[in-house]
Length: 54
Image 1 (cartoon, rainbow, N blue to C red):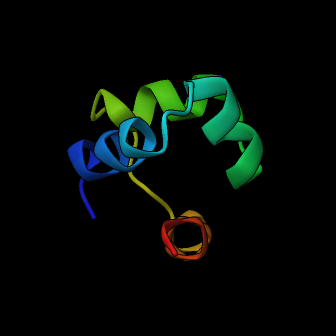
Image 2 (image 1 turned 90 degrees about the horizontal axis):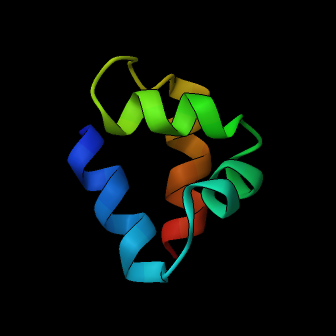
């Protein structure tokens, strides 16, 4: 999963970065860094993303 895919999932759900961070159990700052490509997506976060996709 790429940072662009994460951003698209967030937009498709109509969520803010703050809401996505809450749903994933991470900070808003980390969501911003992931979406900007400055931080990788951890395996734990990938699993959480898969859960919210459905």
